[in-house]
Structures are given as structure tokens and as C-alpha cells.
Length: 65
Image (cartoon, rainbow, N blue to C red; front, side, top):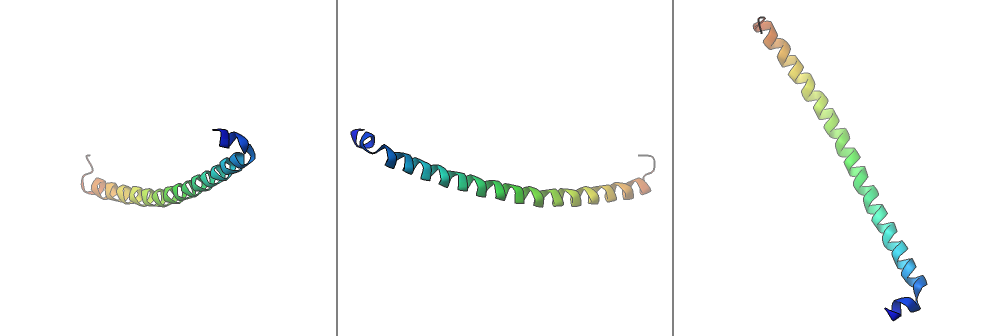
């Protein structure tokens, strides 16, 4: 504890460095999340279109549904 109190500037510098590294990791994680979200959004749109197409085919064969 006394060692830390003797060098508060070094401690703050270390804390600032650790915080900057944490922020970089968070930014990288957010970027990957956004990329994954975009990929999934495309896949969901494709699957929705396929389901709608199948529903149309089923409705054509079973008009009373």
C-alpha cells in the first residue's frame, strides 16, 4: 500500500493504460457483434422469403387452408 501511495502517477498511468486496453477489446467485440448481426439479418431475410414461397405453394395446393 505504501508503495502505491508513493507513486500515484504511475498507478494512474497503469489504470489509464488498462482502461484503454479494455475499451479497445470492447470496441472489437462490438464490431464482431455488429458483423454477426448483419450476417444473421441477411439469413433471416432469406429464410423468411423461402417460408413465404413455401406458404404460397402450399396455399396453391390447399386453397381451403
